[in-house]
Length: 371
Image (tube, rainbow, N blue to C red; front, top):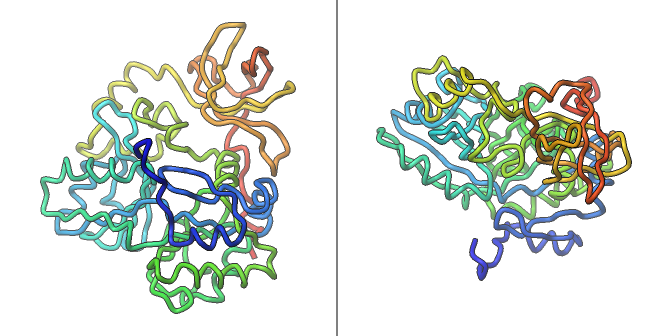
């Protein structure tokens, strides 16, 4: 986005303004940051439910007889293991093993895959896919065809089930189905970016306001709230979920940020594999750790990390954790100093404030709490 260009607007922009949302620019889009306050929205998602507009995310459709071959080449995970209706978290990597982007791959069949990618990277991702597409495959940017809503929290299934024609209770985690939401054909996926149970639904923009209003109305008896990207960020931090430009970027590899589970080295070849094998052999110099502030202060994004007055890394994401009622963060530090229990210092303005490296995720949901 150039300095003179205006942020794009989702199909729900007018409704967000009508509801009094505080709007801000994110990934080239004008998006709701909060409605009733980040803390209130965060707690509601942890205990009841929250409704998010995430229509800024990008959608790319890959079709054709060699679709799987293309994805095997350009993604880190093994797509051949996917069955229809299954979703896999993966990455586009560059030749150095760094992240072009992280994404969700929805398998609609061996010759049809639906990708959800980050808003600010969508155009870059599309070009990256096309660059390596020497296969009998068609690549389409279908982002304009979809609105994407996220309903997250222990009451999400109850709320959505009342206007869905599919049995959501039978839908497993990281699975999706084609069904209807309030009579509108939709892709219904049991995924999310909050650490809670919930769903991400995709449907045509002309139904956006009607479905948002219907879900919002049905959610009121469950104390569901409309939620913005501010709470989405604090929720994903508590759950130790990576954010592009923070925990992952073109210079960071999956080994360094703790995402080895999205890499399958048994694949014959994928872009970045040689670099990852080489890095594993040479040793990982930095690693992503979680920390809890033990002194007075908040370790925010970009703050430097010290050990014995020597700089050893930086904070990738940090801030208050509303549900846990503590100040937490993620940081890249020298691997040899990243053990759980190790004491470090975060430079908060001109002070070094003590923190302790702790186990992550900071928050893990109680799977028995969904009803």
